[in-house]
Image 1 (tube, rainbow, N blue to C red):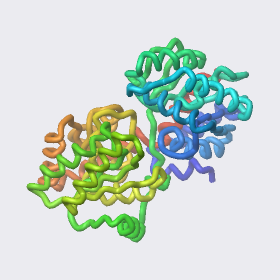
Image 2: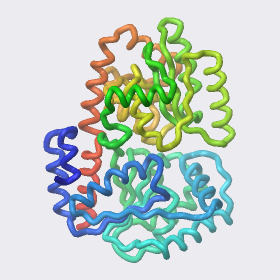
Image 3: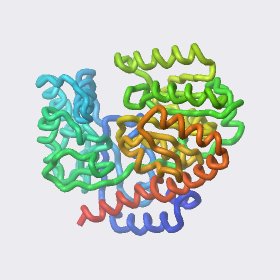
Image 4: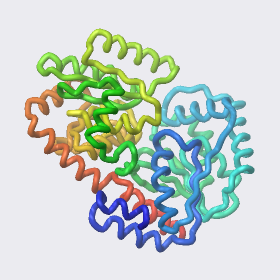
Length: 396
């Protein structure tokens, strides 16, 4: 049995058969993915599922990663942040070092393939060393508000690709090459999304010291201003006046000054209120995230600026209503009044939470609608269909 057959139990009827037919059309072609690493979310999370499936389908698919010294990584982080619209200082020396390190990477990596997909910023300048095949730049973030100087520098590499792929219309910058849209997806059989037994769920929550004795509000995401965890705490406080609920904020922290300040404020809120739980999780805490989303009564994703983060889709796959912002891909995932609610303000989020708690019959109804929405639109089977269709088109 091929790995793709495992998805027949969760994907829409006929989805796997379409993938099998499309795979036949590109069998024998060589596909190469290049990223800056194998860990974390975004491209790496998608490829960890997609590469083995495509290989099982007889599509020659490989995955290479670039590497470098601390200065190389610091420059790529700053460059991507600037392309996302943040203010960053990009020195000529650092950018030249990034280009040089990728020249070294190009000598070490096997870059010959019929189609090379280079993901995000870190390996992007490898395109200057292309030898054969068609090259695509796959951008997993929103670069529509990139800093002009950063985009001017980066575009000299991006325009050397044969095409670019973005996650949403409107996420792209100005380019002189064809551009396509493929929305990201979740893997329903991964550690982050697979079914958990009651024993597993209890053991994980116990290890996290999360008690389930009252309705649980959960937000998972980095402790950054763009995710607005402080706004979530304020919404919780408004709800707490009317309902005895508990709030769990789980995410990753770093030594960046703004993140340190936000995390300090959240810890202070947790010290003052035992029903506010702040969890610092490592990037690979997939089972813990899975358990928290499954234990939640309502999942929050109050992002004020976002790319196409898949937290809402993950939560809806677990049958949870989601209350989120409008930013990035959130509005694509959350169908207002059907799978959850979207809004701009703290007061709006608090109102929607109270509405669901006052009308508990809506919670499983929205959860079921959300799971079906994800089944149709955000599973990896849909992603593979889009990818193979694009590959078939480009391979011609």
